Image (cartoon, rainbow, N blue to C red):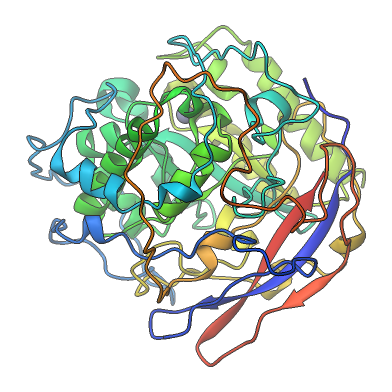
Length: 487
Ligand SMILES: [Zn+2]
């Protein structure tokens, strides 16, 4: 299922606009011509969340400047969950709120890709899918993270700089019901006690409303909050409207509990294709995957499996050894871990100090100098100039055995906070219901000419390696890298 891939990195320097900027920025391929849709549509702060009033008492900025961060037992937080769907169940799509989010999407920019079939474990049927052509850039089938269709945004999948370890934990916040004494703030306190380590946290909306104080603590501690859906389905198995609902309720939960409107998400099981990407993008979200997988969720524990912990230990040992002996020298990593249960948290605590000795451990967004992971620009996260890749344009590599997608991509949605244009051609929202089984070949309908990009079939690289397009820098703009990997 994996492709033996040559990876070529193409940079595009992009401008990261702050909220004060009135100019929108666009990225155009250096090879594109006069096509209508040679880039993803512009994003804007979701108006359909503007009615949400956050809880009071949240921090209003990143805890910088040596500010002490809260640790220890969480306060009790009163939160009314009555307006939310049932936790861990597929949320309804017919509420006025979800309908508003659906109506805000330009569906002409969402490819007509079949809804996949999946069982309750997220196991997907790939019968009939053409892996070689990979028309939908379906990660679960091929590890694809960079769509050939230029109107579909690429995913973020690894840190560009050698030696960087993009720290991420999924499935949180870990509630007392699921974690017992390992519930938050256990891991957050551990991180704080170890070099005030920051992480990227991909939250389940159902857990956010079940443990609001934990989510607030995470923001106050300086972690980066992103969406990981409401009920954790394989997202390619969801209809268009179900995808919106999964993202909507989680974004709302994070905003109402913590006050921030996040700009990033990670699909459960990594299951994403161009249809899902396109919808998430228009909801203001960049897709963040990983290139190293600890498989920690599969260890025995609440909601876990039967993987021997020694196997997970072996992965960490291997990554440390590869870094030490110089063979891990192509790029940095984004690593998948979980705040799921006692096993995953104890494993995280066991290895973090060792990882910190060998890698530059940062939240994933810092690898890309993304300082504004939320639409609220009063939160300004640290960036590091040294994380700007210098020589990566000549990098070639192959996916590692343990990585499902060891390639990087573009954090483009996080690079422009301000968008002036409003989609004007919203067609009637359509829900490609589960009965859809049109052939998997309509990716390019209505949105691309197929020639805007010099990327062709998976596995073949013909792209303009090393070509750079430098977006105009204007006052108040951050330089950011759009990091596209073509394969
Ligand atoms: Zn998950």
